[in-house]
Length: 226
Image 1 (tube, rainbow, N blue to C red):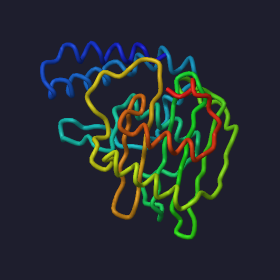
Image 2: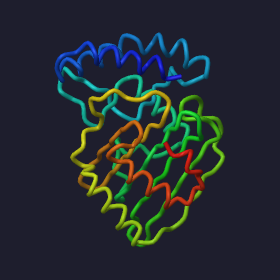
Image 3: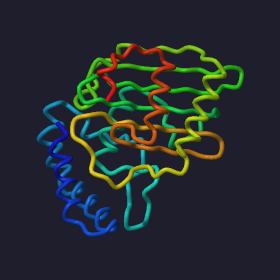
Image 4: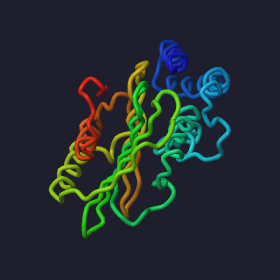
């Protein structure tokens, strides 16, 4: 489904000679071709391509606004799943607790969102799974589970977050993404701020994401980790 989107980015990248050109060309191509791509693919899958609800601000390269923002295509795609999962928007308002959340979208497997919050008296984990596929439609919510985890597990998670240099990583980065695979979005909020990282295949935040999945106790076959 996403092959055309990634081909467009690949063509743009190969035609650029500098980091600045890569950034501007990527944004220009996405803006130019996203509407045509949505008409061809999104509508056939009944994506909410007319939604006015976006979880993040849009990238504005001319103003140098890139962090905690997404291009139109990704913002629409990821916001669609966040809306369907009906989760609190970290980027708009601090919820009162230090919290970490991943949205894991695998092209051919069930979408999953996992949130872990330090509520002082206890650390609470909630996960939701739909019966759709991350590269297609949300489907229907099939599981919504909440339970308390050990403080030791919370400490291990925050250590992994620190080791990944999460707070200093760029929200997105200049590389040619893969085709069918997985998208991992890791968000964090505490009283001092908010940050979001998006990586195809996990990359620097992959270990953090995998640990959160393990803590959720969701049974996922090894060949479905990608």
